[in-house]
Image 1 (cartoon, helix red, strand yellow):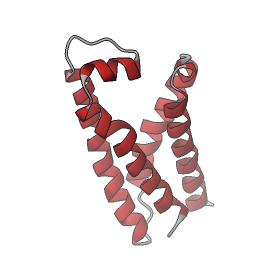
Image 2 (tube, rainbow, N blue to C red):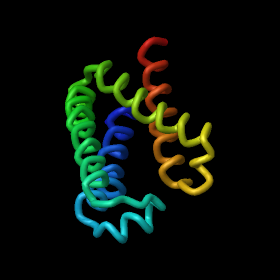
Image 3 (cartoon, helix red, strand yellow):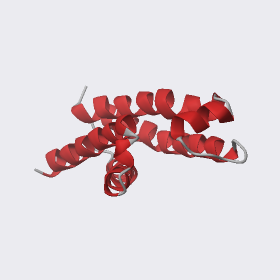
Image 4 (cartoon, rainbow, N blue to C red):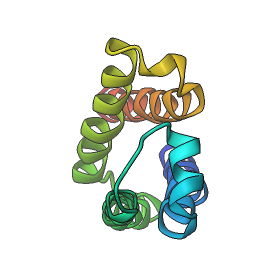
Length: 122
């Protein structure tokens, strides 16, 4: 199994456990405590969980390609935008102070994707 395949599995499993399950199943009160975000309804949390599932569909196709010895350029670029952008926003806006685990998670994935992209080209 390639580094990229292992990274994609890490991203998919981690996102399901840390984002999808909580955001789609936890109570509004629990999500407000965990995220420190107050909401009138749990809908925003649920929509975020669903949005992450849609990204995981893209990651799953990328994993399939990677396991078949094809470089999934579209999936890697999607991941760079999502994880790299998330990492930059969390660090630039000070969100990393209260969200260390998510910041570390998306930064590890972003750096791994950059590494895979560089390895593909060089």
